[in-house]
Image (cartoon, rainbow, N blue to C red; front, side, top):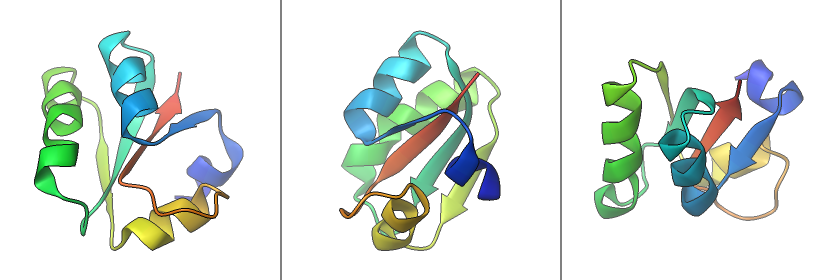
Amino acid sequence: MHRLKQGSKVIGTKQTLRALEREQASVLYVAKDAQSKVTVRALDLAKSQNLPIVYVETMEELGSVCDVEVKTATAALIK
């Protein structure tokens, strides 16, 4: 997850989906406690593109790693 702190990234489901749809993402990060209706599309896109998926315990932890003060369901590293 240290790559998420330093690398170019998108944060939040809307931006993450946009990056996945444009095939710009290299790794998907998903909070385990996020609602599945929020994460299912991102997971499907990542799987169809054979991207690595990293699960983070909580939305709060993922937000903290991304250096934002809000909980985050998904994030992605950008190529």
